[in-house]
Amino acid sequence: MLVTSILETELAVLSLSVQSWYRHYKAKPDDKRSEMICSAALDLFNRGHRTQEELTGMLIARFPLATVDIFIAPASPVVH
Image (cartoon, rainbow, N blue to C red; front, side):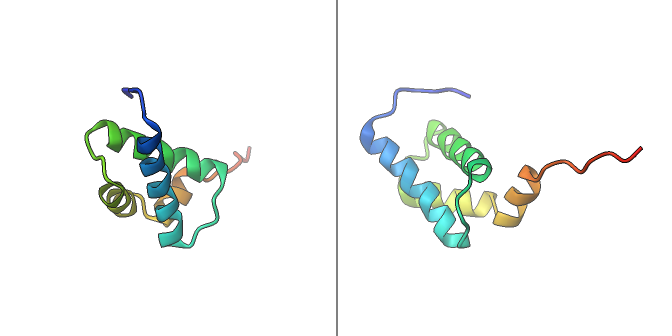
């Protein structure tokens, strides 16, 4: 992932976009979800999507809550 220097105002856009994703899904923030959604927001930002509205819409469309929760769920223990 390409990381560029981020200004305080750009960081606020990223933060508000992630917060809006949580509000949209009425989800309780947790570390695993936040890691995934923040990483996705930063990736979209680095690809040129710079407004809160655009980032929020893309996060909501690409990362439904159920999909995120399945992706971050711990692996089932292996039974031998």
